[in-house]
Image 1 (tube, rainbow, N blue to C red):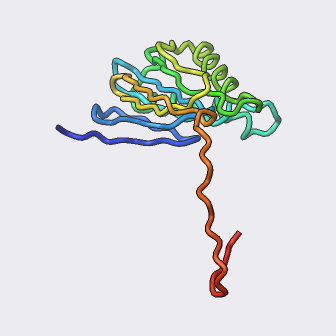
Image 2 (image 1 turned 90 degrees about the vertical axis):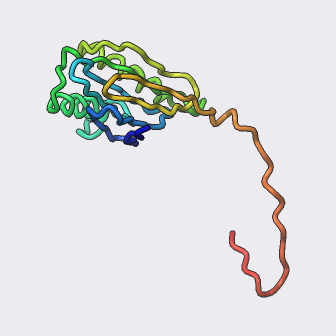
Length: 175
């Protein structure tokens, strides 16, 4: 069996492929990933968005979400995809830490509204919640697989092992 190529992306990155053996992966918490593909051309890609569009005046903060989406779409169009045929699957946007601002919700709203505004049908999504996700996406077919990761708040607290104190004069203790 031929083993395919795995492309792993992280925050702010994207990848595009038309190779049937290629899988694109990422791990998400409050970030979101948009998986776009053109089923006719057999071309697809994924991005990893850290923050939605900013509300401040600085150009960088305003470009996070929209810039990431446009970079992915433009890469697909340059390689032969047709914008009218693009389909989307959206993932992520978890609320990872209760009590803090919910950036996951803001990211989720952003990708949903972007796809709606750009007339890109979202055929499947797994957004929000309180657990991270590992995403695998096969860009030629649009197949996606998600593995839910344990929420940080669900990890049982374990007492650290006792620290042995040494009194030898030749030992150095670092704090």
